[in-house]
Image 1 (cartoon, rainbow, N blue to C red):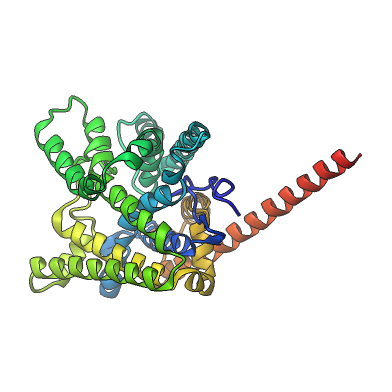
Image 2 (cartoon, rainbow, N blue to C red; image 1 turned 135 degrees about the vertical axis):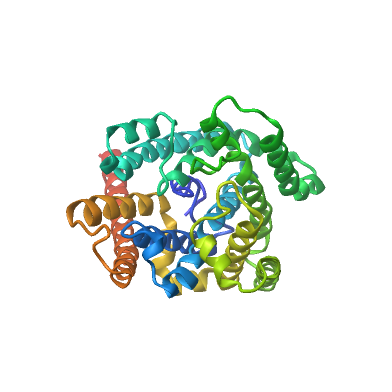
Length: 388
């Protein structure tokens, strides 16, 4: 399967989930994204049915705290997929078509973001829905789709520039982007708080800033360039994976050192999203460190581990569909139809979340099988028409 044919899904649902490189598939991209999605489903499934304050101790730490790895892993894998599938094509004659494809995917994600915003906020009343649709406020469970929708409207235009940028400047870019975010957030006086939230984030509005999360996307672009070159060589891939894991462990060690003792109260606050919007130092060290460890393990396992953990890889292969399914089930079925909100125990909510992961993987596998059958049928029809 070619990179062209895989340019139909993204993170979530917008850039290739797995990409053909010299005849093979980079299954670690599927697996890493699948891990991010499944952690997010566990977080949404539990916190969507009961407030965090009602979680038992073991649900707060370690379970819910570990789900905070997911968002950073999403942003990094987003950059990896762009680097693997699109950056090498920026000098090709058909690049404008590929770029426009990404922009169209961004518009598609934007449409689903708005629709799922209605699904999430429907029970809060018409005013809450209208405010969120008009960017006067933001949802929480589906807001990461808003980040990707906007990012895919402008990042594709910069990929040719990235491909031509000197290596030293590319490697410095995450720090430079982080410095730009820090300067803009502290020195630019925005007339609109929602605009500030979309660009650099705001303490009162739950959203992911384009500039505040850009360093992680740029880090993913750097790692994706290495992965594209080294994935087919086991020794090089393992060295890359080891380096990623070590970097993640160092960030987690820095988090533990700065957090001090006792560590558990800090993890409880991280579970409550303290330092998530805008990104604080402790939250970022913990989330990015854990994300890098999971990414490194996925890269080390490669296609073999992706096959062994196929349900996770399947979820990662169409993360937009996974997002649509799990948000719809949580808010329309579990909360709306069955009335489970604040009516089940944490253990029950966690069990439902696990079942939702399995159901989502099964639905995506069925959906992909049906689409493959449909493509085969159409090809046979075209072949028969030409033969006639």
